[in-house]
Length: 142
Image (tube, rainbow, N blue to C red):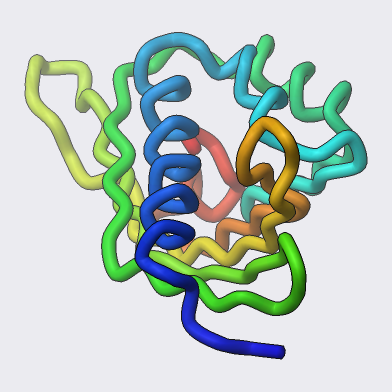
């Protein structure tokens, strides 16, 4: 079963992406783990984090850099009951240290999602850099 997500599911999945970005951009990366399933995985470049504890550790150690994450071109498909997959383009802007902003990276983000009583959660979130410098390739700043 692979079909486009309904408008309601597309909206709810987009809200999950937006909530993740908001938390990271507003110094709340230490709470991103709440948006994953217990055994969820987050991969940023070459860094793979498995399980909520690992994701919580990443969020707690993430530097408080000023960033803004912008998701575009979102596409979600349903793969089963309470299961979905998706892809989007994520552009990350970062404070350049002079009061200005610079594009840090353009990435493609793929995800697998599970519907829970609390709403959609990430089962897997993989971020691959399409364009960006060496720090972006290493997953820094995400």
